[in-house]
Amino acid sequence: MPIPGHIDPVPVARALTPRSDGRVDLMGLSKDALREALADAGLEPKQAKLRAKQIWHWIYNRGATDFAAMTDIAKAQHPWLAERFVIGRPEVVEAQVSVDGTRKWLLRSDDGQDYEMVFIPDADRGTLCVSSQVGCTLNCRFCHTGTMRLVRNLTAGEIVGQVMLARDALGEWPSQPEGRMLTNIVMMGMGEPLYNFDNVRDALRLVMDGDGLALSKRRITLSTSGVVPMMARAGEEIGVNLAVSLHAVTKDVRDEIVPLNRKYGIDELLAACAAYPGANNARRITFEYVMLKDKNDSDEDARELVRLIRHYRLPAKVNLIPFNPWPGAPYECSTPERIKAFSNIIFEAGISAPTRTPRGRDIDAACGQLKTAAEKKSRAELDRLAEEKLAALG
Ligand code: SAH
Ligand code: SF4
Image (cartoon, rainbow, N blue to C red; front, side, top):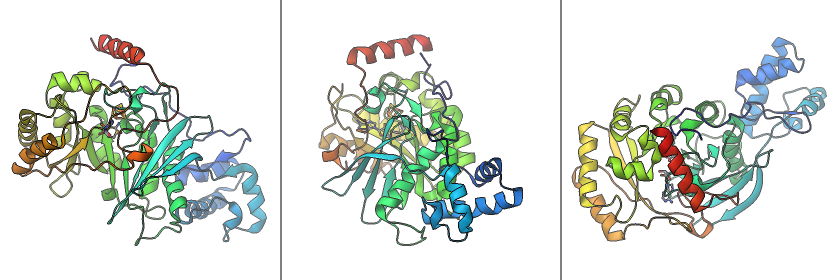
């Protein structure tokens, strides 16, 4: 059994997605990697450099999926490219729209793995909730994704492919600085992004490149359950906003609901937050806190949360998430009155603590609901896994 907290316990998929027809999918390649792919296929270095620049722009700025559309590349070269390369998109198995406008897509990879993405439109923004893994190894007790049997890291191409597909669906090509529907990205879909660091970093670099998708790092948020050793690198090498799934303020409760806490405890986690590069009063760290009835929702918990934030001098805001139940979930959501009282204590301490409105509940798109039809682990199996992990941690 992998030990929670061990870096990257998931087999890392290849950067170049192999296809059954032998062609190479260019999705997810950096400009340099694209140039190398063209050179490997036989283009002269100078040609490869120029073509890479052109093709990259067509892919990420124009949304092209067909070489024939690339008007600044000689027509005679189009078939040569198309024989060797494709510009792929994840396969859409199912697309659903909620009564509140939230959209959810069930996607499938070439090797038949299912993952999901969600688009949440609001008056002033549109947020895409992106997955980083198929399933998740961390088994937080309140999270549906943690019950999935299969786990695999998504490739950079599969991660940025979600953003590309959303742009296709929203009709947002070419990339424009103004008037977009898709304005924000949150790495809050399936999986733990810091267990798939390289692919998440490479994908987000593509998303942020001013020549391509051109989303500002200020509009991207990475959510982690607390993979402490990777947090500084996330700040330095990706530089996006940080959200931390805190969910509890005592060791006992956090050990139970976020098992990774047995490896990286609350103090270590908050110290890493205090050191997060780029966090300041203008760019606060979001602490996510799922409201579980009689588990983590007392006035005392709220006061302890305030104390911790002050103690570590954290530029923080708190996001209270009403627990979304799923069949067989071992918890219930706190009452609205309890959530209000909890939120008030934090507000009164001068810290913003809004409650997240669940979106897309009718299509199971709400936070923590993301879970495909993939084989589920039984309750007994989950308990056994939790025991094994506990034993492995000593
Ligand atoms: N693995 C990362 C990001 C994906 S989960 C993380 O844990 O931060 C995104 C957010 O949804 C996390 O804060 C997670 O704790 C929360 N979440 C998971 N299951 C939930 C549920 N059933 N109800 C409400 N929020 C949930
Ligand atoms: Fe994984 Fe995040 Fe779910 Fe925990 S809450 S099991 S880290 S996806």
